[in-house]
Image (cartoon, rainbow, N blue to C red; front, side, top):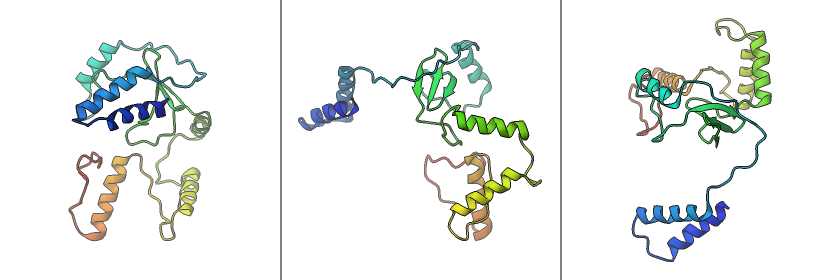
Length: 195
């Protein structure tokens, strides 16, 4: 279906002069209207009914109590209620394919049975202990990860987020080189710690 849509849109564009990005957008919109909304494959999961505050109440709470640097996307932001494998469900039960995964996180899907079972197994034994103590999983994972890296990269420092990783890498580079300036990409994510 997607191939049909792409060939139809690009076929239309190649047979006439492209005047502006607006004409491309209009052609794309017409192509989507002709094909209808793409259908996701069946998925045997029924999300739990949303029982929290109303959408408007949640939006108002967010605006009043969450710093604006933590911005929302879309004119009408999604109110996510549940995740299962590669899908997210909003407060109405509508399903979305999650291609975003999260900020400062690894996208492994949502509630994958094997990952969930491993987390539950570990939490039943020990949820967290500071790394100033020896920890079996901490040491075993560091050894396993170091074995996959090139020779000479055999020391691991675990962090919780991309912000921490960027701040740590910046501090290490500054400490090693003695130079303070860092070259970054405009509009790139470099953490929230002034790196």
